[in-house]
Amino acid sequence: MDIEEHRYRVDLEALESFAEQLAAFDRAAETRAGDVDKRIGDLHTSWSGADAAAQLAYHKQWLEGVAQMRKAEEELEEAARLAHFNYSKAVEHNTQMWP
Image (cartoon, rainbow, N blue to C red; front, top):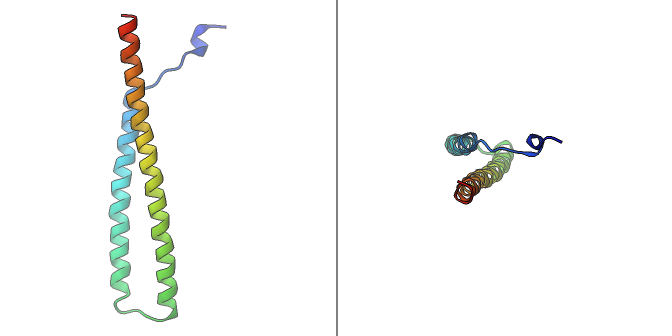
């Protein structure tokens, strides 16, 4: 077996870019959710009844889903940043050991 087959590499720039893209997505999702929530609030100033109540219930579910998605995204972003830090430190440590 060739030793190259067992090596792996981490593209730190790509990992950092991925974390930045996740952060940008989170900001956009927060903005969009806020916009939708405001529109729903505006809609319900003049809408009432069973249909309005059903729509509010579905909107609440949607907001809960958005919150879950954003929490998962934040955890993924943190994992990517931690991986970047750990890989960077491993490279730094190995370079110091074997200059």
